[in-house]
Image (cartoon, rainbow, N blue to C red; front, top):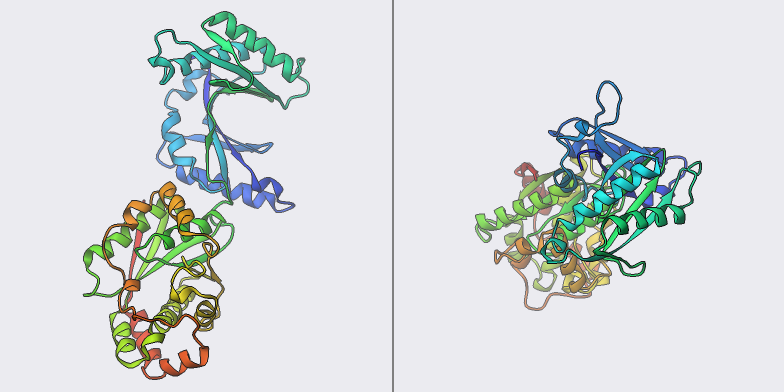
Amino acid sequence: MNNFKKIILARYGEIMLKGLNRHVFEDKLVSNIRRALRGLPDMEVSILQGRVYIEPCPAKSGAMNSEDSSEFEFDEINGRIKDIFGIVSVSPAYKVNSVIEEISECAKAVVKEALAKPPFSMRNDNAASFKVETKRGNKAFPMTSPEISAQIGGDIAQELPCLDVDVNSPEITVYVEVRESSYVYTDIIKGFGGLPLGTNGKAMLLLSGGIDSPVAGFMMAKRGVEIEAIHFYSYPYTGERSREKVISLAKILAGYVYRVKLHIVPFTDIQVAIRDNCQQDYMTIIIRRAMMAIAETIAAQNGASALITGESMGQVASQTMQGLSVTNAVVKMPVFRPLIGMDKNEVVELARRIGTFETSILPYDDCCTLFTPKHPRTRPRLNVAEREEGKVDLANMIKCAVDATERLVVHS
């Protein structure tokens, strides 16, 4: 493939629906891609007609040649950008002049490249089925899309008689996009889509060591929300391994959001005071309200305008409609609960996909699993919760916990 210029095509979806402020989302997406590519040889990142083009910086002469892309590594660049929020899919592609002979030569080379890789390289006869699919964005090109596909498909079949044409279920699809230049590729690698990170403000994620909260943070980040995280640490009831587990989860999330500022709050004194002084069936709700109050304070100090939790309707005693209402009443910030209508299997499936599941199930307790009463109240009343909170100096204890909070910046 030395005669053709390597590039990456990235596609975005939802951004296309934006109106006059669409450029804001496109500019942020380009900025996020450039940040992800830091440390690699200089590349151009540009947007045209719903595509992002990532290609080697051209030679000073401006000529398009293969030497420009000698250090352009498809796998490395794909690995860095395919999970950037806002990107629907990416394709390693080759760029050629919009001349049918050049496009056809490139298509034949792309098919040969595909046949040299598994599973096709493991076959003795190297046989496979293929089709050509063309999009002609350049209407000045003298052939229609079906004519281009037929021409290139015939050339491939003549060059590689071991291949069969199958327009319904081909093993190899050769994609051709004819624009000002033309692009040829065979792979479309799915991304997460969503909106570019940083286009929808900042929120504070209540990050436990469980399965749900990392998924909740991921889902809000996918909507363009910048994420910080807060963890409630109940030493010595939860040990150092529990703390390291949460840091590991933050590190996985940082792979999607570049970095996570993690606030680790000492929470033992508050839990013990509530356990020893408050009505037992209200203990879970009061502890949860204390967490929310602390999270809101730290969020405000760090420029976040909302809280994020991993709660799901009816999953545990505190997550009934009445319980969530009493919990919400202690804060003024919006509380986002992206998992609210999901069942556990759905959450687990997404946790596996984003890579947090195996860490989340490590058998180290977090503060949410401690001090749980045998019969927690499922339909709490706000006036009772507030009355029980009055039995401890919760305001002062919250201030002390906020002041003693440890802060880490976690990178992927």
